[in-house]
Image (cartoon, rainbow, N blue to C red; front, top):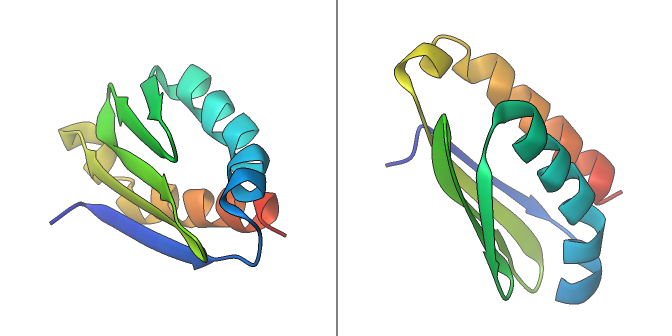
Length: 90
């Protein structure tokens, strides 16, 4: 099971949901040294954390395994990710 699992509903097309979250994902990748690989509506990331973001018909799902040091800040990291996803999908 992933260290962080988030699913947030949306009422957009997959294309529009992806368009809305992609800038936030890219910014986070740059800030935290993550490598991104998009394949359709799924973005896999690796680096200090590894996991995926999946754009679904009515939700965006994110799962991540954190490194040892990041686990100390797991709750804070999860809250920030939720906030950014909600803002992007508002």
